[in-house]
Amino acid sequence: MSLRTPLGRVLGLGSAKDGTGHWWVQRVTAVALIPLTLWLFFSLLLLPDLEFATVKSWLGLPTCSFLALLTVAVAAYHSYLGTTVVVEDYVPSVGMRVFTLLLLRFLYVLFAGAGLFAILRVAFGP
Amino acid sequence: MPVRARPLSPHLEVYRWQIGNTLSILHRITGVALAFGIVALAYWLVAIAGGEDRYETAHAFFAGPIGLTFLIGWTFSFLFHLLNGIRHLFWDAGYGFERRQRHISGWVAVLGAAVLTACVWAAVWHGAHS
Image (cartoon, rainbow over all chains, first blue to last red; front, top):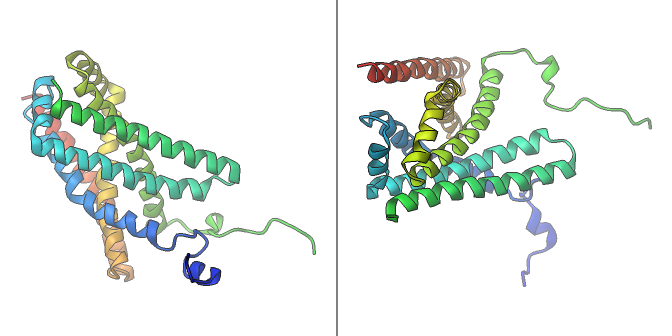
């Protein structure tokens, strides 16, 4: 049981009711994505070719699988935070907004989950 | 008291287009474009895990006209969102608010992204034809 009054609990949290949490995580993931996405971008550019064998052996390297997992997870989270704000800003009706946000959340888990699972398959699979 | 629709902020219809608001909107547009990039990245990763035939299908899509257009658009979106994102992080830390600094950093972000996109795809083109 909290001894804080209802007023004390909401003070400083604003209309979004979660204070600066969303804003701050957006920045933290942004900073993390600078090295991660640059790594992915230059890795793909510097591969000798994009044939199946080349790409699969590259992604199967432990360092590459690990960094690819981090990149997909952090990018999906950062993207989810960003598109959530876009939906909150531009979808006017409450019902449609809740539906879109819910759908968005499921889609991010679906696509990020598929990407992460695929990396693990390449890293540990046959 | 009569109820009538009052103007809501931001008053986009009376706002003069300039570098600041244009790049702010472009940051959002490229962010949404990059969200679709995550879908494409997930598809590509699943294709690698799915074996050679699946990968060849994905590879043929990305090497085709629609795929290449998408990849070039993705490259610009990524580079602009990265450069403009760094600009935003400097603002968040309290730097770069002067008019001159804002204008210069804005043009560096958008023109830098355009030039780097051209360089990257010139390098890809050169690599594919040598």
